Length: 79
Image (cartoon, rainbow, N blue to C red; front, top):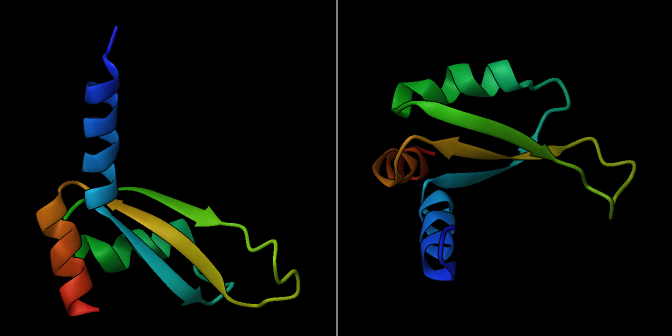
């Protein structure tokens, strides 16, 4: 069984390689984001976040998980 410290270290590593992207068109799909962001490294996962505060909002947001923190930093630098 993993200790609490190991679980936290794994969580922190995931956070360090995840980028928050906001104001996306409703037409943007996971495939579109992967295609756009794969030029900065390997996209591991894309997760769209529901906006419950503005139900009629036309923009979307997503969490994009890169393969490593260096790729996430490069993506942020180039955005």
